[in-house]
Picture 1 (cartoon, protein in one colour):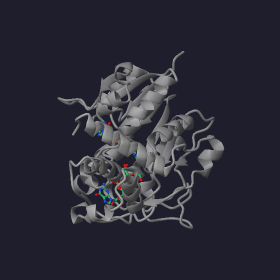
Picture 2 (tube, rainbow, N blue to C red):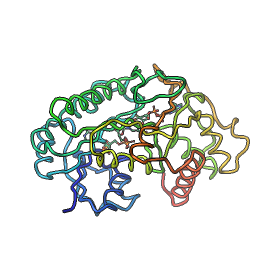
Picture 3 (tube, rainbow, N blue to C red):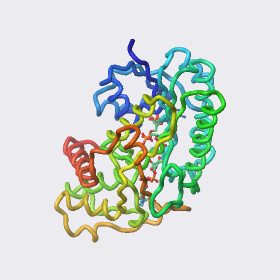
Picture 4 (cartoon, protein in one colour):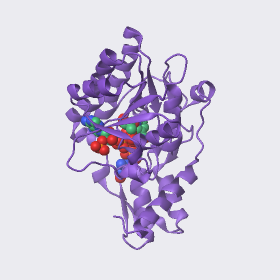
Length: 327
Ligand code: NAP
Ligand code: G4F
C-alpha cells in the first residue's frame, strides 16, 4: 500500500522539498493550498513536482476546510509546515501570525484527532523559540525557551499543544526544532536569499548596493533539502520524540555577505553594503547554534551541504534566474 502524506505549506520552501522527497519515496502526496486568485506554485515548479502532487484547497484559519481535507485524504502522515514564517512581519501582523501559527496548529490537530487519529503528525517548530537562551553557546532539546517575537511565541504555543496531544491522546506527534535552513527557493524576504539575489544583481550590473538591518546576527544555516529528510525520519521512529535539526556551526550575516561576494569575484564588497534601519527588529536574536547530536544518534541524520556550498548554490541559482530574465 502506498503511504499517504498530507503536507500543509506545500507551496513554501520546505513544502516543495519535502514533497519532492516523499514522491521519490513513492508516497501519495496531498498538498494543502490556500484559496487564491493566483496560486503560488513557483517553488513546486522549480523542483518539477507540481503535476505529481494532489493539491487540495484549505486554510489553517478555517477548521471546516481542515476537517474536509483530513476526511478526504486519509493520511498516514501529516506534515504541518504552513505558517506565517517571517519573523519580521510578526510584529506587523501579530494576530494573524498567532492565529495561523498557534491556533492553526490546534485546528489541524483537532481535525487529525477526530478523523485520522492513527496518523503521525510532524510540527514545524523552530529554533526561534530559544530566543537568546543557550547552554555554553549551544541550544539543545533541554535548553529553556525564551521567545522574543510574536512569531516565536505563537510557535511555542504550537510546540506545547503538539506535546500535549501526544501526552493526552497517545497520538504520534513530534516537534522538529529546526534551525535556519535555506535554498535557492528560500523566500526573498529572508536574509540569505536577499543577499544571494542582491549579489547576483550587483554582479550583473542590475543593482549597485545592498541594504541590511545588521551584519552581526549569527545563525546556524543549513540546506533545506537536507532538513526535510529529518522530518520524514522523525515520523518513521518507533516512538514519538522531539528533535533539534541543525548543522552545529554558526556564521554571521557578514560571513554570508562576504562569502557571496567572494563567490562572484567582487573583493571590495564593503563599499557596496550599508546598514538600513528599516530592517532592524524590535527585539533580536544574537546567535543560534544548535546541537543536533540526538538526531545524529537516533535518526542517523546528518547535514550534507556545508556553509560555503550553500552560499554558492544560492548565488548561482540567482545568477541563472537573472540571466534568464527573471526579476
Ligand atoms: P515558507 O516558505 O514561508 O512557507 C510557508 C507556507 O505556509 C506557504 O506554503 C504558505 O502558503 C503557507 N501558509 C501560510 N499561511 C497559511 C494559511 N493560513 N493556511 C494554509 N497555508 C498557509 O516557510 P518555510 O521556510 O518553508 O518553513 C516551513 C515551516 O517551517 C514554517 O512553519 C516555518 O515557520 C518553519 N520553520 C522554518 C525554518 C526555516 O529556516 N525555513 C526554520 C524553522 C522552522 P502561500 O504560498 O500561499 O503563502
Ligand atoms: O533570514 P531571517 O529573516 O531569518 P530568522 O529571523 O532567523 O527566521 C528564520 O529562521 C527561523 C529559525 O531560526 C524560522 F523559524 C523562521 O521561520 C525563519 O525561517 O533573519 C536572520 C537574521 C536576523 O537576525 C535578522 O535580523 O538576519 C538578520 N538580518 C539582518 N539584516 C536581516 C536583515 N534579516 C532580514 N530578513 N533582512 C535584512 O535585511
